[in-house]
Image (cartoon, rainbow, N blue to C red; front, side, top):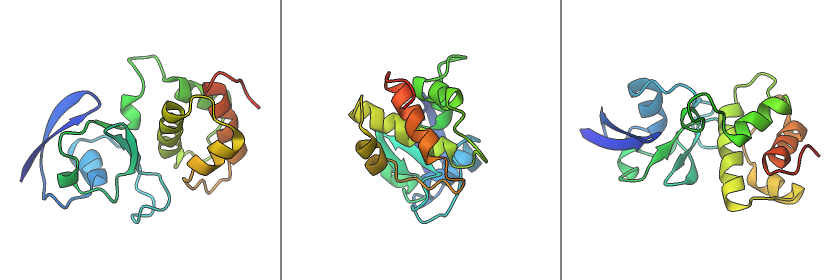
Length: 153
């Protein structure tokens, strides 16, 4: 079946069954490989994207459920050569270790800051449910504070 979806500001057409997880459409059909496959059951958050502005684990969202909502992936955060504030904070705080979960972490942090521009440590901890097997959680928290304008904490 043919679906029209808006990804990173561009209308895209894909041929796929409606029950295909959005993750595989992004990676295999649209070649947007920044969104990672981690667990496949919606637990780890490596596949997190924004759908209609809300954070969604794309391994669990069927293509047919996207509808007319805009999809934003990690590739859609930067504007040309200008990184988003969260991406720049990630670099400044040297967050990634292995880096595998970081696209999902950045997408989750971006969604958090859109809802709560100056989150407390408790709000960050509650919102950031993605798994980082390297344990860079203190640097993730520092990067979120930096992106919120509070500098590193």
